[in-house]
Image (cartoon, rainbow, N blue to C red; front, side, top):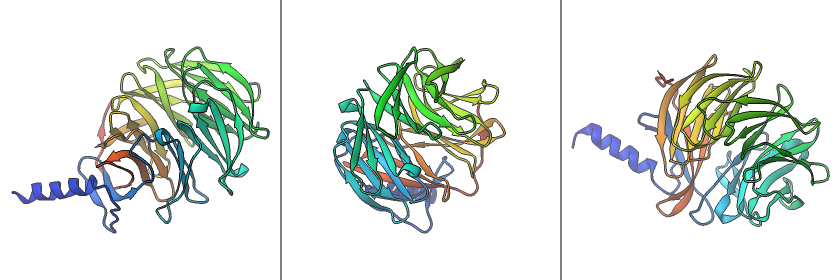
Length: 343
């Protein structure tokens, strides 16, 4: 067998290995611009994960193990699971608010959003009912939590002080992800069926602007480049990605990604965008100005959720079933990666 094929086979065997795999010289993954750092075993059965939320101050990554109804707390510094918290029925969204010492998690099976104290890891509040709570955002000035109700077609608003549901904002379509834009202080929501990005005033809890996203079918996942005031929005029904200027509220470009894109993550230090899809395809881009250039593509089973540590640039992919076990796959961007333009 030629040496090239032997090397490639060895790389693939390491890439799909289920157990811990840590190396001081990470294994490059062909065609991706990434290298494998570690596969960390995760607790619980080999079932679906969903959103993640990272606290850079503590190095704790909060991962929703959706079909296990557990919230996993992972220390990225020690690479160990700190806790595996039960009682989060069909948990989808998770969002940490360090200033409040709170984690908010959407217990979709109970139609509620749960508030957790980060110091005790105890549930201290419940808000609802919300039909199908999914993505979560926090508006600091108003001390309010905003929750995508994917099936109910609203964005639900919770008082973070009292953990009480305040109101529900009708969107006119299914709610995709909900994020807070620190540049304007507004909440942004992707709206299915209408193919829009909606802007919400968090103080008045009203929609202030609707931007139609041509060619983006059922927009869902959102990531922001806060410095450049750009939004990246994935269309889950036609494997598409939009770049939007949030100052002018204009769509600047459209790109192709994997089938059924879900969660996005942006690394501001490296100007890298990761678009994870239900198909297991992860599209990786480099941002130059307002244009994206494709660096490479990853293919991993169930790789639809992604998170990054901006200080180390490590990328985290919880994978539900690799050889019968759930793992957390940690990847590192390669220092040198060739990029090819894609439009």
